[in-house]
Length: 191
Image (cartoon, rainbow, N blue to C red; front, top):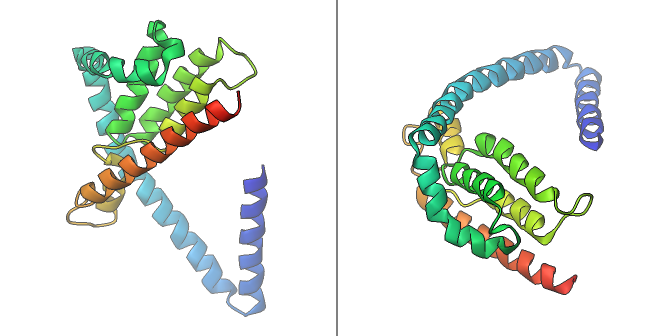
């Protein structure tokens, strides 16, 4: 709600400033140009996201997602010891982590929501340490392949959209390390 108010105020201020300075036509032209660019970007992103969502579905149907889940299970059991014996939760968390590793934030969101819904069954109305840790891991997701960012760069005309890999890996490792450390420290402080 607050963001819609902020955006409305910003758009209203821009229109009023444009009218006050006699540039109402330029403001209208810029608004139409921005809307067209937004639609064009959404269409190009839709194709790329469909491709990677299809890859995730192929991984799921071929059993590769399950194999990745088994491979990640020892790490996830250490991160989420309260749910180490709950297979549906661990599978949802693993699928979420897999999507984040592939840089599919849009695909990871519903998987993360499913994992959080399953985790919340044990402590309704209260965010458990494991649930908070899941939010931290999603927010500071480590990415091996930054698919969404690369697709945005490609849609903007970049000839080498994946040249950001080293910077992405470094930023991902730092953010997940800081996030996990903070989550563990705060969970011990606020017991």
